[in-house]
Length: 297
Image (cartoon, rainbow, N blue to C red; front, side, top):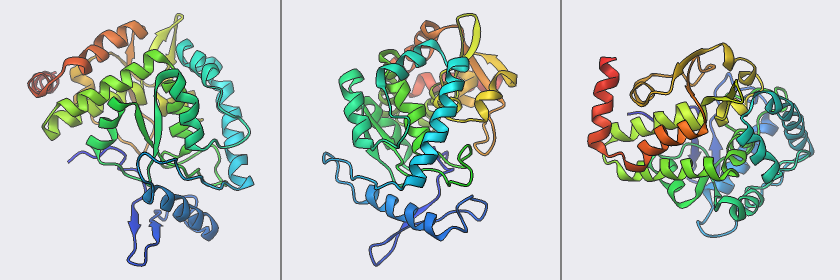
């Protein structure tokens, strides 16, 4: 069974009520007891969250705020060169702080008047149908922790930098936000796990790792590229293929490395027509036809 966000560190709730994030030995923060305690405390906030109530505040340290400031500054420079014009306009429209980590409640308060989206805290892995389904309601699951300070420009898992700098900026665009909602509607509409996996893969190759021709250049709009200091410099050298639903929905990807296969839209209108149109009306039967087409191709 395909699982979105299988790269999240597992989170375990212990019998005594404590929460433990199980970091891999290769994680930059594995041998840092202070960082591990912070991860456990922040995960516990999400585990205890009651939907419909204000999101619990994560009391970030100065060191954590400094990590955000470093990455925010470096990514802002790269966005001017590599991000689509629509994304850059959304960055200005949202106005995230550059010197500190914003609280998820604050991000939602900024987003809601613009496109109606709000955030929901997540401790780690969110079931696939839940993660995508709530997009239809204008909700986005997000982690609250930040990467280890020893590697501010690298993270082995999606942290608050990815979730907010990558996704919240996109969600501040009316046109990108509409695509997120359509993806959520599609995830709710399809019934089989196979069809849901297909829908999620199309999301992966577009709103996570999508590129398009914009102002005569290949630019990125996917949150996974635009929140990665390293990958944003490499995406133009990857295997760039035409936007193709059957191919996107059946192409295997490795989450542990840079995405070496990317799909290019000719424009934002092209993306809306092909991908938005698919999500707007797809059902299990239509997905099965595309899967068969993709396997033949």
